Image 1 (cartoon, rainbow, N blue to C red):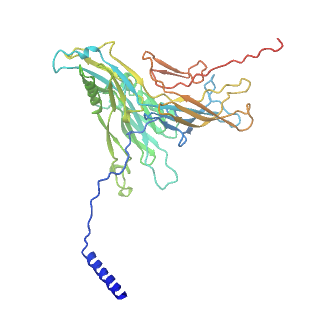
Image 2: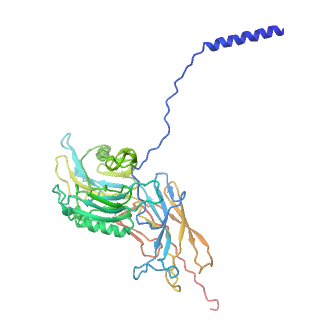
Length: 497
């Protein structure tokens, strides 16, 4: 019996070897798969704070909150220098000899701006087949805004980076004759260690000396290396001469560079057709007129300087950054009726402040001019708030010397799906109230408020409900007023009466 079993096993094993010898490798095609990836909604970063922050900042994980529509609130701490209200000079701490500071909580609510345009009714006249009324808009306000950036490449293998210092020339064809004359050049002496307001004033004075559209230019510092240049009222209109960089002579810095980029300029969007009976077609034509204007953006830095600035091949290869194109601005349009349209700024143009559109031309189907007309209006329905202070002013004790100011720190926030949000923070308690280092926790609720009355021309924010507005805001804004403070008076009757 055992012999028969052994023979059977050997026969099975031999068959298995024969079967394996006849096998061939087969590869089955799998289904196509696409790996998850992300792409930035915003081509460029956005500056949230509107005032310089010499000290302070955000806290990871608790300084940003987003609602269901993508609108968001950013909150931060800023240390402000205390100034004497009578002299405007900083108040010096007698113990340290340094200016006194206080920490306050600031925030900003950002949303996609919506502007409503209304056209004269005559643009709908339809007596000639295949001919339509048309209108033109100016986007970007009336003046050119540019950004000056001074930068340097990171120097490896050194304990500290060099400060950027030297001179550079800014120039523009101010008189429009096609030639940049010596009088149209301004030489800037730059040192990044100089006070940023002093640098801004130096640049502003030099640019105003060029004259023409720059004679009342305004320069605002973002930081020691970035400055916003706004052309003044002398530069109204489109096709304004832009600044460029001339001769550069730096004495310090690792591959320093100067660049002028355009932040905003007046752009004419012309000859947009109006459908007399289908507002959706007009909205589509309006979108296409804006969204076909493309601008290229660099998506990343240049790894090394370009070849003409590399002294030797040992510096490494030069690589161009990835480039993406986006429309300027990106909009979506909703037809309210045949002559009224809501324009929403989206994508990279969302969450930004935009000057109101200007209706520059409207004609009927025969080309007759319909402007000026009281029916032609532009109204901002919704826009981001300005930077606002969250914590109210501390009450001043008249029996103590100097102002009574205490630090407000560690802000955190939460927001619901509708955009209502709450901000909490830690507040120092003065020794006059409770001796030793103790803190209280305060909270404040806010609600984005839309435009209820289009006739309102000013919105007042009275943060401490003392009857004095801290932030008068020109124009109609969507935000932001806390719940009013209710004041109650306690009366104590004389028991002996």
